[in-house]
Length: 112
Image (tube, rainbow, N blue to C red; front, side):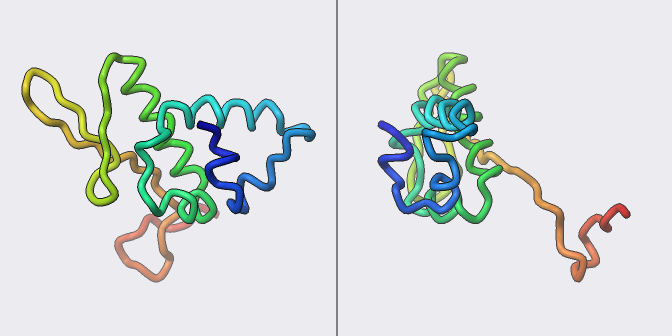
């Protein structure tokens, strides 16, 4: 499936029209989504607009797993991917750290 057709209301995807200088990026996103299609959770579009880097990373992880010969599975709740190897399940959550929260004492301070 095509991510642009699956999520026509995504503000992030609307910034990448097919008749723009972003065509190469658009094509790359379409290719990555082909590995995730059907595995994304029901929050995918909202998360894509809120944190596109994290969702792009999730698509990349999906591609890596498939290219390496795994058959990732997913559900709407829980980790992004579940794979099986030698009868054992491995749960994978694609994490893309953000800048932190300056009001949280456990966050790394902003570098000036």
